[in-house]
Image 1 (cartoon, rainbow, N blue to C red):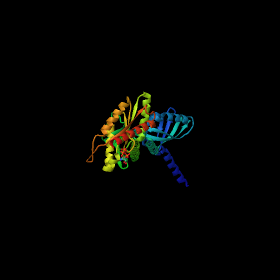
Image 2: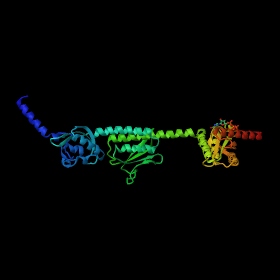
Image 3: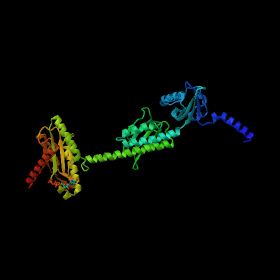
Length: 411
Ligand SMILES: Nc1nc2c(ncn2[C@@H]2O[C@H](COP(=O)(O)OP(=O)(O)OP(=O)(O)O)[C@@H](O)[C@H]2O)c(=O)[nH]1
């Protein structure tokens, strides 16, 4: 290099080096042993929102996010003991109150008795990582949820770390039923403007809304809106799954035509009724009710009228027993009634007589009048059996005997 060029180059280098603190995009700090800031370059304004003169002379810990103070003090101790700090990350509070995620390199200069630190704003990368982790947490919570309040409580907690969220209300259709609420008492009503409403969708239908009380409702970033929509999509899928589960679980235990418990649920009910009778040393009765000549109704008037009759019979039997008693449909035209705290056989017979009588009331169906009849067999706990099979067999046989007697009398 010619001498003139070398001189020019050296001059340029000196000038650039002199202006280096202003040119750097990272913030360079010099911090005294006690933590007081001795110097910071102008880059601090873009990163922290403060001018250098607002930071110099103050203790650096005052700017740190309260939750990160403890581990930052520990890290400072390591640097002071001569271990260079590389890649340490913590959070600072900007002048506007928002959070800045910072990555540090720092070393202790013994002869200057200063800690030299270079701070890089990694907020964008950090937020992207947190959002990614947040989405995973939302999906996991959605996968695990067995009830909606539990789901929205988890969502509330996850979203609070990622959004300026103050409170959340979830309303479901129909009827705007509030499924979850964590809003502050002094918050504006969640129907008011200022709350952000996000639709809960599933299979193209809106199930309701998540309503969010945000510190800056109008100024969410595209990524924050994506996150909210992801949460809403996950919640919609859970609502759909729980509704389907409720449907299936109901269908497994109840008879579709009459709405009465089916044979399976009846088995559970009779088991617990027997246990209660045993504990309370009380008596229970099992009534086996079978319609007479029901096949004829189907044959003469059609299956639909048969269905309507079964539905009406279910209502009629139910009207004769106490609320705590169980009426179930266990077969085509077979019903059972489970009566607890029965004094004696006479009392069970009185209920059976009432059922027989109510069933026999003439019934107008699709323009015809039907007069159904039923045969009823009774089994008493513990006299006729102490386990289900014995009781069922006894009631079944008693019903057949009653039916045979009726047929013989009618003949
Ligand atoms: N409409 C309708 N019919 C049903 C249903 N389930 C079973 N059935 C019919 O109920 C009838 C029961 O017939 P049976 O057990 O012979 O009883 P029944 O005609 O009442 O004769 P007895 O009990 O001897 O008096 C059959 O024809 C079945 O097809 C149902 O859900 N709806």
